[in-house]
Image 1: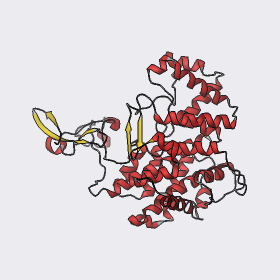
Image 2: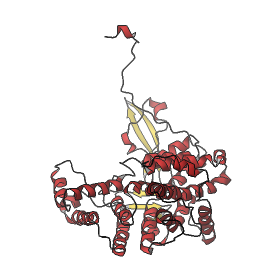
Image 3: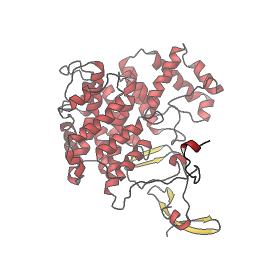
Image 4: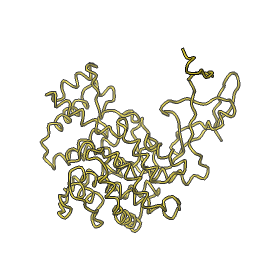
Length: 429
């Protein structure tokens, strides 16, 4: 039996169809609302607006559930790895051994940038922000592969692999550029994470000092946890740009731009900036937390709570374990990490924070891990983009495969001046 919703406006009632998702989430289809009533809905921030139907990721914020293609995030973080999870997110099923090997090899083979890309890097200012470089270089990389404009379905896997591989390469080579380190090429014989860390930190590219298994595993888990997260700001941006039939590269670059904002991908960077400020004031976190509780000094506790997850962030429970393992393995003596531990311990046991559900979230722990392994703070959001690339690709793919898809074009409620007559300059009072 089909379900409907009844809406009454100015005494006139209409029925609108109800859509029920596979996990029971109820939505009301308002596609005909304006044509039937002349009215539109208004939902600033789109917090109650479903912009699409998608089969990629399911989130239940009240229950703390996150699943990719039906697989629980905790199980994927424990048993899978980033490239396998990427395949799952993009293609909808876990790959068999042959498919996974082919997918991994394709990414490794396409990770290198075109030789002329070196000139693009050298044109950036020495202090260029790495997110600006990443967005620009994704656009630049597309110019070396004009076949992307044909959007042939048979080329999609190659373009997807190229984006996943080259995003990590761009990030690492930009770091080398900023540090004055020599240009090196990716090594297709290494694993995805090992190769990224080698390109980031190897002095000359020839010396291969493989990182500890704990570091590799922690970074891999960070990428898995960030692979997709439903219709967040950057993902919905990718879908909107894709709806115009822009290329995969253009849509991904738009996602980078949206992710750059401090209210989205910059959250883990904000955590480290908060810790730095606390340390500069000679505080161990105690005075800061009292100011937060007393609402004094305009203090904001970054990396705690979440807009979607109302009880706990399931990713935080997973990444905390990796954080503890990395800190134990590296024996890091870092006053900022000591402050972070103090904030965590207090927030988990103080009734003020517990009652308000201000628990440490994934951004809190990922920032600590990345600092511990030597990732510069300004690159935190870049690593977020590396992890999120499979989700952007999967959402782009869904848009392109939707035969009924339309270009995204939201409405608005106009609140400006009503009709006015033009007045000549010398007659304006």
